[in-house]
Image (cartoon, rainbow, N blue to C red; front, top):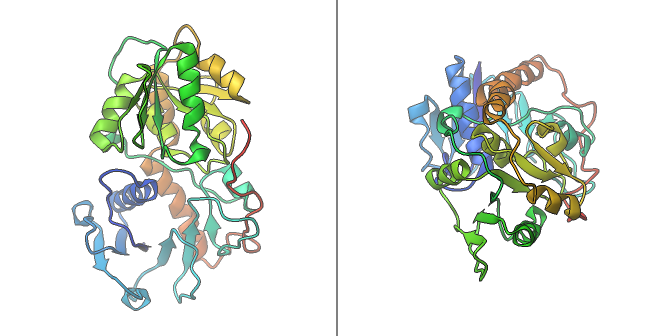
Length: 317
C-alpha cells in the first residue's frame, strides 16, 4: 500500500509537538510493516532515515501527489476535494457544531463520542525511544507536570497547590515560572533527553486536566517508564488509566488526597507491560491499516459528517 501524509511542520520535532511525534512514529512503523510512505511536507523535515520519501512543498500541494498513491492520510480536515481515497485523524477538540470530513477518525472512544462518531485509533509511542524503566526505590514524594504550563485546561495551578499542601516535590516541564517554594521546580521547555531524565526520577505524573482530553501522550510516556498517573476523569482518561496504572479523581479534594498518600503501591513492570500491550506505534499503525483498507474499498467511515458535540472548554475540578 502506498500512503501519503501531508503536514506543514518540521518532522521530527526536537522539543514539543505531540502531533508531529505521532506522525513520525506512525510513518516509521508503516515502513517497517512493508508499506510505501510519502510525506508532502516541510522542506526541513528529516524522514529519509526511516524510509519515508519527502516531497517538499510551500504552497498548494495537491499537484504534487504521485499518481500511484493508494490513500491520503491528513491530520486536518480538508476544505478541498481530492481524487484519491482520503481519511483524516482529528487530534484536538473542535468548536461546538464544527463539522469534519466523513472519513474522520478520533483518538479515543470518548473523543469519537464527543464528535458524534464511533471510529478511533489510540495513539502509540515508539518504545525504542523509551528504554525500560530504571530500577529505583519506589517512593511517593516527587511528581511531574508535563504539559503546556500556560494552558489553563492542563491545570498546573492545582498540581502546585496539592504538592505544597502535602509537602511533596513537583517538577514542572512545559513552561517557565518562578516559585519561592522549595517544593516547586520549573524546567522550562524540555527536549526528549531531559524529559526521559525527569520521567525516570519521578514517582507519578500529575494530570488533573480540566477539559475532555482527546488522548494525552504524556500519560502513556509516563507509564512506559514505570510511573503511574494521578488524573481527572475527563475525556479519554478512564480508557487509559485503571487501578493498576494510576488514580482517577473526581475533584480537587480527591486529587490532593492521592498526592498525599504515604507510599507507592504500583508495579513498574506491570506499567511497562501495559503500554507494550496496548499503546505502541506498531499497534497504532496496524489499526490505521484496517481503516485505510476500508476507505480504499469505498466505505464511508461515518454515516454522516462528524461534528463537535462537546468542546474543549474549561471544566470544573
